[in-house]
Image (tube, rainbow, N blue to C red; front, side, top):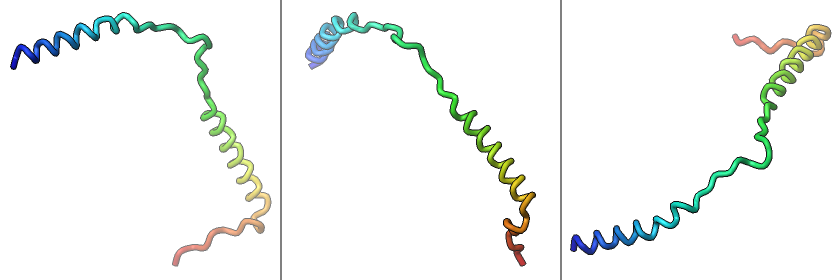
Length: 70
């Protein structure tokens, strides 16, 4: 029983050995591109928020304050 397991294991190892030499590693053809849209979006949101705050300050009647809780 034990020799049958060892024979199967030896067969599996022997079958896997030729596959070990097939792996190749090559660098990519194109340079790696890093997308930094997150910072740009944050700047746009901050600018937009500042513009809206200025608009509210110039036209307070157009933007009434929210109701207060009793």
